[in-house]
Image (cartoon, rainbow, N blue to C red; front, side):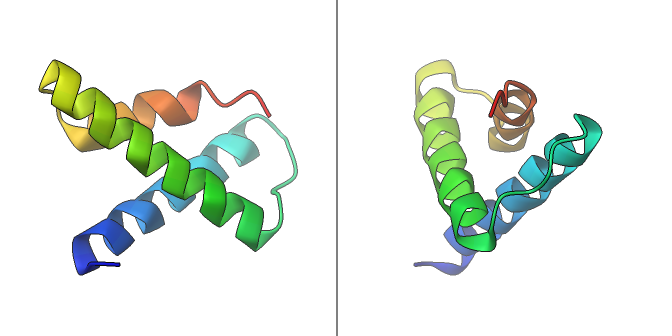
Length: 68
């Protein structure tokens, strides 16, 4: 995994953890959170290609839609 991709996943993990705390939901175990962050980064990349938007703003939008 490249450095930038790793940083994107770290950012996604922080966004997900923040969203969980904001919704008063307990955090899942580290591995599950890491998998969710990888999926969030993949989805953000796909949406950014389709829409031509900023990757970080898309990650924030996706983290807000967290319903788990």
